[in-house]
Amino acid sequence: IQEVVYKELVYEFLATVSFARKDGIYADDNLIFCLGGERRSLSLADFALRVGIYLPAEVHTPLYQQFIEASIRNIEGFKAEDHWHSIANGVYHKGTAQESDIRSPIHRLLHRLITNTINERQEGDKCPTVDVFFLWVLTSTEVYADLPFLLADFLIVRAAKDKRGSLLYGGMWITQLARSFGIFEKREASMLTFEPQKTFSTLLYKRARIIVDHGMGGFSIPDDTPRHRVP
Image 1 (spheres, helix red, strand yellow):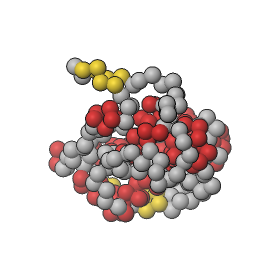
Image 2 (cartoon, one colour):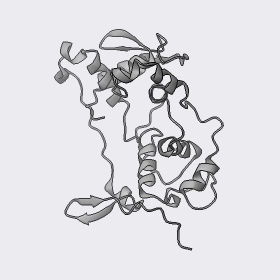
Image 3 (tube, one colour):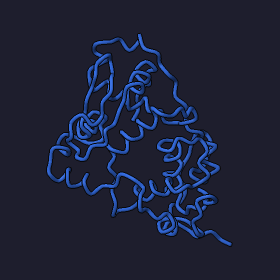
Image 4 (cartoon, one colour):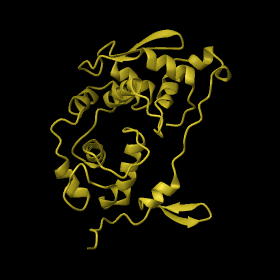
């Protein structure tokens, strides 16, 4: 998602948002907040459509509801040791597991994006259990994540915390919501305060062996053939 972040909209949303965590993708009044001076109330299905996670043709089908009901919402019961063995070298210990132990550069890239976005850390060298959980969800072909629920939950957590080091600010999603309600048609964007966003550091990505620097602005992802570390 690529959106401009506006401070006034972020403050208004985070100061008023609540998430009921009701069962059912179509349950009314699940996510409630103020935006553009008006009270808004959405089901998770409406929320998914407004932020562009899914299309209307996908959401309004019985198959979609079955998919969401079978999707994962939390980390309970997840065993990090089992998944770590399939993607990384060594035995998993949550206090010492390192990103450099992950064999595939694609998986290391995914981990770096997870730490910079969902888990809001600038430095992504450590691999706590929650990081391995999201790697499992993103790389497994047998499990699926309830993305609307997880994103709504992320925004609620954002409202309760102030993590200025995060490279993904929840404001991008808030701008998307504002656009879906036609707020920019009623209010000039130039009257709002634009908040510049941080960029990803290529140095961190080179250090983690995620990209190869060819010079003159050229980068590539190295061979993705997983290899065990040579003793």
